[in-house]
Image 1 (cartoon, helix red, strand yellow):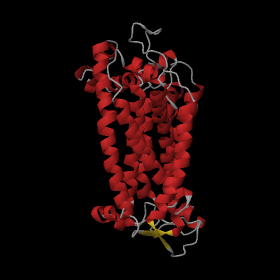
Image 2 (cartoon, rainbow, N blue to C red):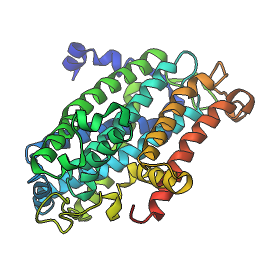
Image 3 (tube, one colour):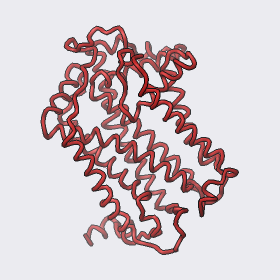
Image 4 (tube, rainbow, N blue to C red):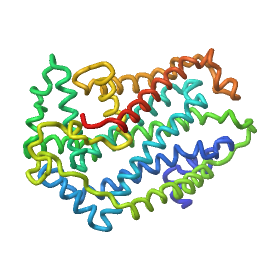
Length: 368
C-alpha cells in the first residue's frame, strides 16, 4: 500500500488531504456513496453487455432470458434497482449542496458540473429503460420521434429519418435501438466519469462547504476517514440494493408492439396510448405530457416533456446566479435569508413543482 501511495500520489489525495471534521456526517457521505453507486452501475453494465445484443428482434428475449437465469437476474436487477438509488441520491445530494450554499465563494462552476452530472444520470436512466425493450422501453424512441415531429419546420422526423413507421419495422427499430445502446454504454458513461473527475477535482481545489447546523471547530481530519465512512454507508445502502436484486423477482414486461409475437402487434397507438407508463425516475415526463394536454390543450402532448425539461434545467442553472449571498451560511438564519436567497429558493421551487406535478399526474393518469 505504501508503494501504491508513492507511485500514484495517493498519500497527497487521501491521508495528507485534510478536511473539516464536521463534514464526516451522513449528509456529506451521500455524495461519495453516489459515486460508488455510479461506479457499480458502470461495472454491472459492462458485464451485462456481454450477454445483451441491441437487435430489435431479440433484445426483449435477451432480457427475458437473463431475468430467468439466477446469476444474470441478480446482476440485471441490481443494475435496475441501483438506477433508482442513483436518482434518489442525486436529489438528496443536490438539496444538501443547495441548503448549505455550496455554490458560493467562487464555486458556481462546481454547481454547474453537478447539474451536468444530474442530467447525465437522468439520460442514463432514459436510455437504460429503452434497452429493456419491452413496450415501456419501446416508448423511448417513440417519444424521441414525437419530439422531432413537434418541431415541424425543421422536418427532423423525415430528415434523420425518425418516424413511427421506421420503428415498427425490425430493421428500422434496430438502428434506433443501437443508437440508444451506444449512448447508454459508451457516450454517457464516459461523460459521467469525466464530469465526476472534474467535480472531485473542484471539491479538492475549492474546499468542502461546511454544514451550518454544526459550529465550526477548526479541527481537521484526513480524507481517509471520509472514505471509510463512504465504505461503511455505501456497504449498507448498496447491500440493501443487492438484497432487493436477490429477493425481488421482476418480470420482463410486455413484448414491444413491433414483434409479431407481441399481444400488442399491429396496435394503432403508441405505448402511452396503450396505457404504458415509464419507471419512477422519469415518470414526471409522462405526467407533464398529460398535464399540458389536459390543462392547456397543448398538442402534441410531448411539449409537456420538452417544456418541463427546459424549466428543470433552467431553474438549476440559474440558482448560483440568483443567490445574492456572498458566503456560505453560518446558521439557519443566513441559510433561509429570503432577502438574499429568495430568488434561489424560487428557482428550486420551480424544479420541485415540475417534478411533483409530473410524478403525481403520471400516477393518476390513464391511457393516453
